[in-house]
Length: 215
Image (cartoon, rainbow, N blue to C red; front, side):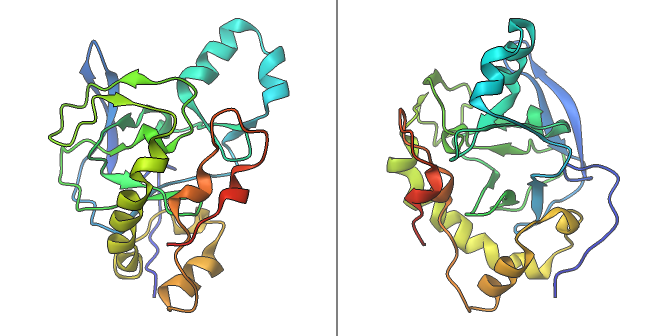
């Protein structure tokens, strides 16, 4: 049974915003142990969905913020998080990854004072960037087609952590839109959708969900 508790933030409540460095800016850090399998972030109704046509008509002052703080979905829309989720930084050894659902889970235990990170390679980058994560697994440069090379490794990490969803407190469970599908995976009645469900090949006009692969 999935254990729900009350929440006071829409990003995981055991987290806070802290300054990291002038080069990186701010990041999100755990204030208490966040166990593997914990849902750390989920798309919620207050997040803005910004279509490409809407982005084109936004004033440059606003579109710069959308470029900086949003991510691109497999459908070609941008999700602009209203909460501290927009400050989660990249790491090549990410603490959190997204299965083929609209949320992220901790793929390992996140210790108190450890930064809560995800892998920007999963977010349909339009341009590559040089990585500053300094992890032992650092790829050096994060590329738009990273999912093709790294998808199987991401899926393996997610598959290892996913069963723990049922065994740890889930403050964000009420926000999960695919509850029935998650329960089916946990019960062994269906396969865990791959993280590549979210992938949108650079330059493609077709929805990323046509690229669905099952782990």
